[in-house]
Length: 281
Length: 290
Image (tube, rainbow over all chains, first blue to last red; front, side, top):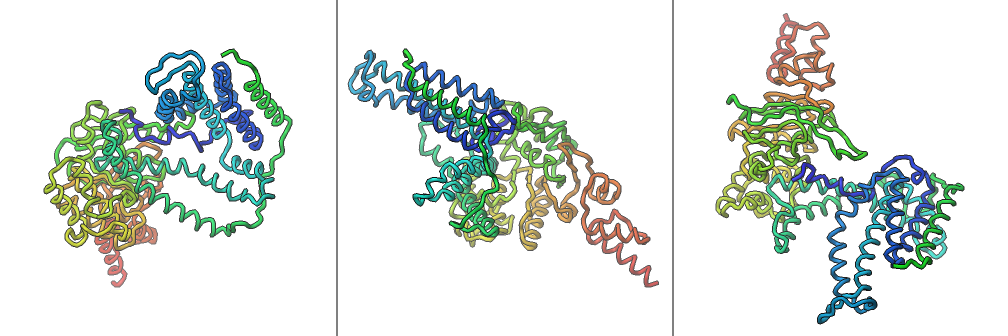
């Protein structure tokens, strides 16, 4: 049992901002969001081994230039590992109709494992890690206020089709802003219940009902706390005369510089290369 | 009071998020000794490491450097029976009413004993014992719903939930914060009773000096992750230089006596208790009459 058994905040990288003042930190948040979207789309489409390894290397390189320790990215991947594994098994067993090409390795009953389905599994896992890395760099190098302002100004044209841009941006800020808060609340709750004799994750894994019941003492109070926090937030916003739907001015005005455009251009070129280059594997 | 401390902390250090850019050293070297049956106050400003320290008492945190010994067991021992330790040291967090999750009061208090695997009869007895100790009527309240309670009552339920484990040492983090004056006094009286009648060792963190003066037999003052001084309330509150040097607040009784002394009256600053302070003031008044 490690001494940081309850240090949940250690494993949550979303919503944490790590100011190192690097080149990436200084980029215009709108450009960063745009580049992020383009890269994610490219990574999601790219289906070759080589392409995905290059993309992974690129994501690691982003950690390097933003001067953020790569351990942050890895600790974001850790909690996703069970999910990645389950996904891999499901894809291996049930995706044979889609990925039936290539050499057939196993053909037994409904199970059909081919070189294509194995590629699907490995590439999906790689994509997952790439995207976690990429979002970690984005959130670690951009404060939540910057992200919201960025989203708001990028979505601004949608106002013409009556899309509630400001409300949307507000919801995202609140959601991101409260991730660390709830992690801390949860940590406190786990400690409090452990002090009363609760145990987490010690029962045998096949006793699903027991292990589900074990989390009730945390989930129920956490839900209560979340409700109370939401109410406090509403009061605090109303106390500062927040009015939904009214015209709001923004104090942060962004102006893209030549480095911003260069970075965006670089990302677009990388995405095009990833998609258009005929990688052999 | 026995010779061996029931809880001993030797040069304890703790660093949060070690080896990350957000590294922060919360404890830089705390040492303390608590003897069986004592009532100890830990005071210090926000960020002085109080909460980190008390989480070491029941093994929520293990010592990174230094030692914590509870009732003869070393917390750094990897084979330590951690569940046994948490039964021995009951830890009540700040705002413990947040941790209530069952629908019925009795069920919530029974959570700990049930987790211990006790027979139902024993669990029932413990719930009754714990509820009566904090002044909640077992027959009347055990089947009431938890969400309809007042803040003070909820806190009592949460305290009873920890007491039902029958701990030898009770650790409380700001037990009365945010309570109304009446609930506050009731809770303080409960704590006195637990300490005196049930002979439980009590360690509590507080910012309220009246409370500290009322309950504590000894005080530890924490600052910047280390303990500055320790002593009886008489030693600490009675010494103006110490108070000023370490920026410790004093109970109002001490403040009044200090003001009187500044005006040239002959009063004993060590009379921090309400009765003793009253006597000092009365003697000043009497000398004035003559």
